Length: 253
Image (cartoon, rainbow, N blue to C red):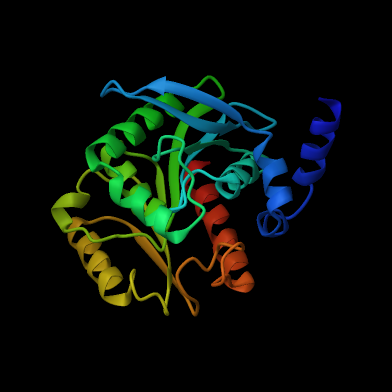
């Protein structure tokens, strides 16, 4: 147990990019999180990974994983958010399944039931707001599949800030009425799925709905912030992360 604590403490001193780029370091960082479970409002039993900051009460961040599932990488990002002073909860929309191939990831993503996912996210956000270590301020952040669900979570249960990394943002103005806080989006110019037409439409819908949106474009491809993938762009990943932290600081302080 002492050795495990020592390893986790050592990993905590490393930059996030270094941890995410090394599966062994990511696993070590992920091991420092606690597994928590609830029964959702819809009656489903769900689990998530929780990382707590050194000082509390603190604002809370809900993380939604990529199409791969709740893997060590996303748990490592949650650990980093805790290091930055936030209560961080990495939710699981795949019921414990984690993909190792694109075919599996696609299958898990397509099998996600929208109503159940919304119920899960809404229930976890309410849990976070009431957590003894949290101060009631909340934000959501997600990547790829999770980027779209970060936005959906904020529509299901209003939060103080929403961050979308190259996620599906196809919404009309009427869909966006429940949004409480501002939204920040990180998008890639080479992304053929979450493309400029989609994002332009989202910007128009947000403007029509009278909502606050900041969009950042990067000369990169989809999943540019994921060091374990072939499209990783270190410079843009670092820049987007710094913008994410500043956005949270401005809206959760």
